[in-house]
Image 1 (cartoon, rainbow, N blue to C red):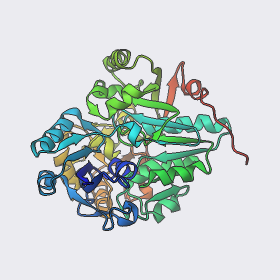
Image 2: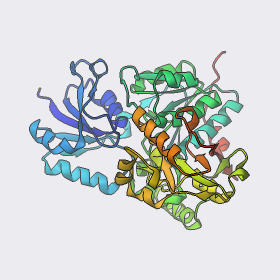
Image 3: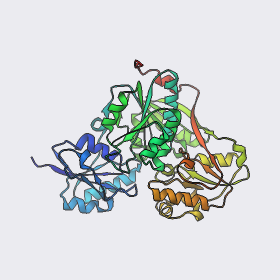
Image 4: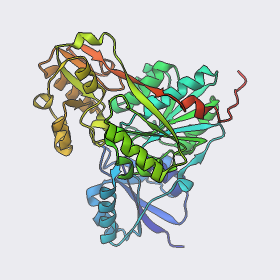
Length: 444
């Protein structure tokens, strides 16, 4: 039997998962390599042999996506599998056209091939775009379950940018765990809030092994999704968050549209700050494309200590990196808070240093907003973010990221944290939909 040569296109997350659950021990295919584009510093590495299995004794190379056409032709690749998330549909077809023009087939893997079944009840929280409010929704679900006496464990979508062998299975319950695993700012943005809640959160590379570990201690598992990716597990309840600030995007981005059409429950978040026409458009699309889904409306409620102190102050706003970059947003919670409490927003553009300048070139929509994206994939980027913030001529820094920046970098300016929680409006609410799941308490 001659194996078919394939390439997996990704960005250090969904691509590795697809490899492990579908290609690793598959005798019909040979994975020539991964191609990567979105995340800095991951190309020219290898997916390690220790994790890759018996067919890949030397591991699997990771190439820049710019080499895709040459790789297809040089290796007689028959299929290329897209394993990205949060791509505009136009970009998906542009990538497909590149693959087809080079002579290969363009492929997508569905949920039947990639979702793992959990032995304990599992609630999935995903979204149609990054920055819609998945994590605050996940934490609200956890809050409800914990009040009912259940042991809750979270599993987070992967962000494996370091040593993949060491990151195969990670469990976080303390801030020391994050230091031990050398977490980036982006990783800490997702783990910090769970640690504050006292709820274990798992992440890593091998989501089969991760699930087995989580099952040992959980009455119920919450999948805290990343970007707008599909859940890695087969959910007992599939909750999808919509963003009325970007109404229509649920039909324009991959795989967010998949989530939208597969949802058991949809949450329209940010009702307190959204334009009415955005909410109206979401309701029209929901009725047309997923009328069976339960609808929950919610506010993204600001949580700030002494917010009146920002009145009249010149402020620099630091926002969530993924939301402001490939998420396409030009503002977040920090901007909403600054406008609400009368701060004078100072644009960060003239203060930026190092690779942050490249970020603004790659995502020019950032120039339309007033927030500095918290880019921190590497120690160098952490330092550049620190230098940019300290260089700014402001009275106050508003930390609108999910992480506590002062724990990650040294900020010499006065800092105020802007957090947010999800609060449902009316009925049905999350309690109404969660109580329909059968959950058994473990013997303690």
